[in-house]
Structures are given as structure tokens and as C-alpha cells.
Image 1 (tube, rainbow, N blue to C red):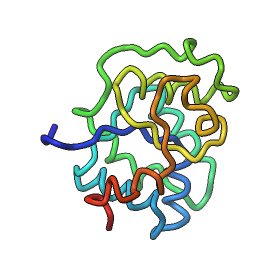
Image 2: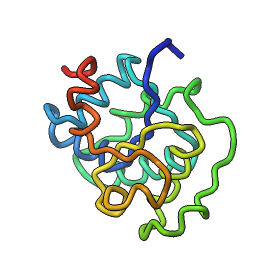
Image 3: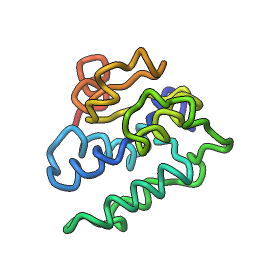
Image 4: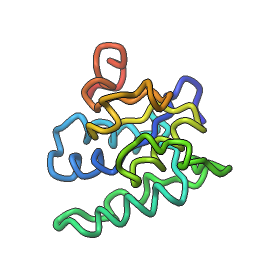
Amino acid sequence: MRRGRRTVVLDTNVFVAAGFRTKSDSARILRAVRATDLRMVWDEETRRETRRVLERIPPLSWADVADLFRNEDRWPTTTDPGRFGQVPDATDRKFAALAHASGAVLISQDDDLLAHPERIDVLVLTPSEFLSDRWATLRA
């Protein structure tokens, strides 16, 4: 990992937004991951969920983002999605669990995650919040 790189977990809605709006903050975040300015940590569950969603939404393509799931950024241990039962959408629990285990910022546009981040003990930011002045070095 390059020194000073922020570690993030990206919810599937970030990939979807980036696919439809190439000048969006979501797309900027994906470009930062591709350029290795950000480290996107992932595990099999989050990778599988992202792929499943992208393959169901034409014209989005898994092939366009598969390279972002770098082996060296794969989370090496198990997580505990069951610990996040307070998150209403069960598919979001795996992203919260990974962010918690890895100490990463969870980037999402999901109201269930953003409404009460204190309940899940994870820093959850929208793409715009993440790219706010605090993170100005990632602005494209």
C-alpha cells in the first residue's frame, strides 16, 4: 500500500452511479482507486454483490470495474455481517462489516447506512462528502 492512501469500502451504488454519470463524484472515486490514490478494500462477499448488481443493469458492465478488485487489496480475514443487524437491508451489512473490520471509510448513497452511522460504528460518507474540501487532494 502506498503511504498516505486512504482505505475505502465502496457500496454497489457508487459503482452504479459512476457507470451512469462519468463526471460524478462516484466516478471520481473510481478513477482515484484505478490510479491507486485510494485503496479499495474488498472481500469475496462485497465483490460478488457488486458483480451481481452490475450484471443486472444494462448498460453497466462488470468488465469495466473488475480490475479495481486488486488481489493485494483483498481483506484477508472474515468479517461479521451479523453484528450489523440494525442495518435494515441485509445486503448492506456485508459492506458495513468490511468497513468496520478494515477501519475503512464506507462510501455509500444508501439512506439506511447514512441515516444513523453511529449505530454501526463505521464512518459512512456520500461520494460528495468524501470528496469535500477535507479530501481535496482527490478532486479531479
